[in-house]
Length: 272
Image (tube, rainbow, N blue to C red; front, side, top):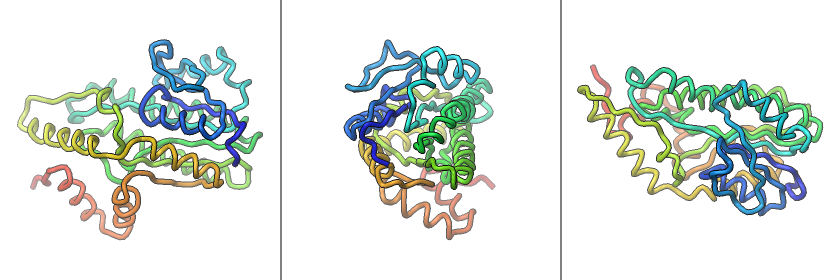
């Protein structure tokens, strides 16, 4: 697909991965609309038209879609990127916090995809759902995030199959770690029980890994290149180890070994 002259929608485009994707699409010649829950308070990339959209509220999504004329724009590319994170033990996180994760990462994305699907099908466009390598390697103490992303990838795989022969393309864009401000917005809950130490250890590993990760621009450039080359299906982006070597080893290794490696990576041990 030639991105030049296309219309693109990127959710969560005011910062991080979404902002980098929006910038890369503008640089490739697309006209880009970006969404945020509070567009007036965001810093937008040059060339991006801001829209208000809260994916955590599935009921309000259709209203926002219609009231802002999003259905009349004619999107050729839709990138579902908006997300959120919550960190803490499953039994200590408020259930509403966990539910909000699923609403944002999965239910809201499904709703927006459903609204955009007929137009994308008509224009033989691209639907991109930004998932995570947490689908294959769950992050400890981020159960809601892991579940939301796993569900998102399963949903996207269903669309990849359904889109065969329909003319449009679907990408499950699984990201590894990138140096963004995502961790700053993560809801954190560190308990006061015997396991607090291991929770803090994992968060320290996450923070260290984030600081040493590549810039989000690399993920955005890869996505633009894949669209220009008419690629679809599951596409991974991150370091060589995260996006290529680790997923390959996980496919040929016993699940218990993969789980052991994941636990060891975060400094955790299986309790007997």
